[in-house]
Length: 193
Image (spheres, one colour):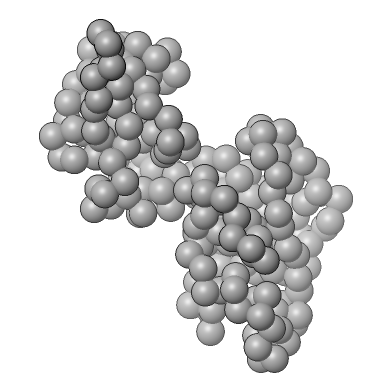
């Protein structure tokens, strides 16, 4: 199965990216990061120095501690968020469970959900298209809601229903397809076309 470690060779950096991007609004100090990722403090310190030198993370001194947070202005922020969205949490769960869910043509998570932003009005966090086995999907969603401590607003439809809604300019589908998204399964161009 594909992983962010396919592109980033440092396992410490991969773990740090996951921590920073799964909790994008949180600031962390070094010892807290070492506990979260289970790595040696010197390795964490080295990676933070490197990540700061290339503009990935920012630091802020508070009292006698230095706190780090991911820099949202970093050139590849959106791409890294997308990779983390696919390889952790809900995205990973869908990828692993896809064969048990039925015939899944498209699976898409909203960009706002991945970035931990409030849901936009009349949109969804997750769009699934295909012939799905609903009890399996409901179980997967409940598990993820418990892990994430947040509700997942999702929509399921068949491929024929998606085509019908797109050809009849359904405003609900229009809003979903206009918004930013992270494709978990399927081709984005085919979904939007």
